[in-house]
Length: 429
Image (cartoon, rainbow, N blue to C red; front, side, top):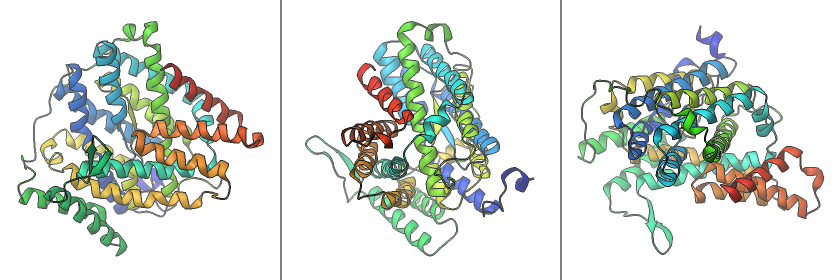
């Protein structure tokens, strides 16, 4: 049955490899089931209800991606989008969280519509090859800065923006040890090296008293406080149309960047650099957005942490299905999932960043109109802390440079339209 559903032999993988990949991906993104409720509860939403909504929406999105699109890419509520939901829409604009959920739901409806009419495929396939390579590398750099921040290796500084953290902190040292351990295990071709690294750091943290082990099982909280509480009528207010647009636009490019970045490194793009079964993949995250809004959480999106799973061999939707099952299991074993600290998963993300940076080597460095926008794209992602903004700067700089260099024939109408839309987004929203 698994062979029929996922075509394991065709993709050169096995059930064991896919299960290990699913476990790896889940462990690197399990933080979302605790971070997302913490952020959204600032709006007045019930923490426990959002916890359940986060787990279930992630399970639904990942399962659809795996079963329908057959990609090893997991979905869950997006980090940047939950911050926009909380701090820009609810707290910044003063609207209720119910209305904000309504805006998320409407953006999901818009996603489904444009996916059915192939507009999103047109957008994704229009991305120039150099920008696709840069997106892959940029996603890796974005992962790296998240990992360095979570590990405490890089910290904020009022004068220099960033600086080196406290290298005497045992947690920082554990993260560095975990990274070296993963590199050594992967170099020696040890199966499950990334998971071994994560578990080793977690066990050491518990033994040293840095991480509290609260047991394994806990009762599932009620989701009633957020279930079907979105206010669609309030979200249809003319003043919130811009909010719906931003949810739609940002998630479109976050998901696009993740799909391309993870798929490129996993070798899942076709000979023309395009993603097969793209429509199914795009419908998967669209359905996750709708489900998440109904359950009570902000927009779901494809997760860049999926690259951790593909790095250990995940190549089919079975990886995503394993992630979905683990998110459902997290409903019952939330104390166990919370035992994995951020500085234990940070080494895995740094390892993936090393793999994804290879995309820069394939760029045509002799052509400045290709290499300069690629570098801008890759650097903008970590420095703006946004995949979407990195893609935006890439499209705008690519279009502007080609125009000024007299290379109009290199520009497709889609690239120009997308660049102009990003300019409008920055100017008006």
